[in-house]
Image: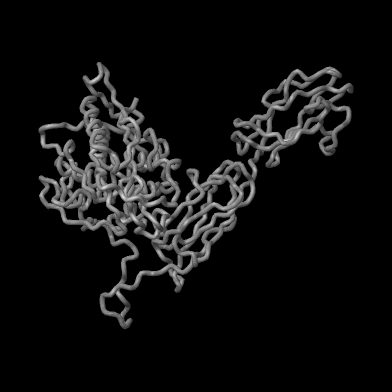
Length: 582
C-alpha cells in the first residue's frame, strides 16, 4: 500500500507543522529519499521557500509516495527490486523523453550531472507521468494538462501573460503540460525537444528538455546535494515538495522499467494530470493572499525575470531558487521562425528583424466530413492553418477547438473544448475525438483565442450506428416444438464486424413467409408482447457487450410445418433460422 501524506495539500498553503510532520514521517519510515535532519549539510529540513512564484505557479502536485517493501519487519529494511512493482513502471514515450533530455543536457552542460531519474520524479508528482503516458507517437498529450486558474484563491495570483495561447485563459495563467510550466516561464525556458520546430509545453519531449535546462541553470552541479535541493526548490518553493520529489528520485534510481504508453499508474487523489479536477477556464474572484500566509505567492502579470546565480558548483546559487538564467549554447539549430534580416534595398536599418507576423484568418485544411462508428475514435482530426494578410502561415497562434451540437462525442480524454498552438507551418490539429453512442452530425469549431474578429472555421463530423457484417447462431441444435407448445431452446446469435465481436448493434427479428417475401404468415410461431398477445416482429433489439443477441421465448402455433425467422442488424448482416412445428 503506497505511503501517503494523508490528504492532498495545496501548494503555498502548507503550514510549517504539516511540513515538519511530513519530514518526520519520512524519516521514521526510512522511506527511500528520507531526508536527514540535523547534521550532514542537508538543506532540505531547514529550507526556507522564497515568496516568489516558482516554475509552476504553486499549482497542485501529487503528494503520494512510492510503495515500501519491508520483508522483515517495519522499519528494518527496504527492498525495491528493479523489475516488478507497478509504481516503478514509466510509460515508454515519457521515459524516452527523460533519457533524451538527459543526453542533450549532458552534451551541452556536462558539469550539471543531470540524471533522468530526477526528471521522472518531477514528472511523477506534477502530472503522474503525463496521466500515465496518455501521449501520441510524437509525445504530445492526447489532451492538454492544465493546473487550476491562478487567481490567488489558494494558489498564486498570476494575471494572463500569454493571451491564452497555452492555457486557453485570457484573464489568469494556469500551469500547462506534463511538467506544469506557467506560460510566462515557458516563454523563457521552452524548448523543442523532438525537433518538430515547435516549443509545446504539452509535448513531453519539449517539456522534459525545458525542465532539464531549468534545473541545470546557473552552472549547478546536481551531484552536489545543496545544488540539487536548490534546483528542486526552484521548481516549486515548498519543503514538502522537495522531500516528495527526492523520495521518488531515489526510488527511480533504485530501479524502474518501461511500460506501454497509457498504462502507467496515476497517483491516488486529484492532481493536474486528472481531467476531472481541471477547473473551467473561467477564473474566480481574485483574493490577495494574507501577509502572514507561509510561502506567499506574488501576483505577476509578466514573465519571471531570471537573475544570475552564483557560478560556484559547490554551493547553492546566490539568487533565490527558481530564478536561474535561461540556457545558452543549446546544441540545436535555431528554431524555425527566427527573425530574418531584411532583404537588400528594403529601406530598413541593416540587421533589423522583420516584424512578427500577425494572424489575419483561419483556413480549413484536411478533407471533408469525418465519420466514425458509434463508440469508436475518429481517424481524422479537424485541422486549420493560421494565415497572415499576405497568405503566409503564422506559427504560435493559439487555436481553440470546440465540439458543438447534440452529441456525446468528446476529445480524448473526455473534453468538449481545448486549445492547440499552431506549428511552423501555421497548422493546428485538434486531438482525437471519441464518438459516443448518439448518432448524427455535429460540428468541430476552430477559433483564434483572443481574436473574436477572425471568423470561426467549422468542420462537420458524423457518428454512424454500430454495424455488423456477420451473424451466426451460438448453438447448432435444431429448433423444434409440438403444436401449441413452446420451443425449449432460445434463439441466440452472435454479431461480428470484420471478424470481431460487434457490441451494441441495433437488430430486429421477424417471421417471414420466404426468402423473397417479408410478410409474416398468420399461422407461424410467435413471440408474446407484455400483454401476452402474439407478436411476430421484434424491433429495437441490440447486441450485448460481447456481440450476442438472445431472443425471447418463442411459442409454436397450431399449424405444423417449417417456418423461417429472419434476424437482421445495422450494417446489413442477416441470418435466417428454421423452426419446425411437428
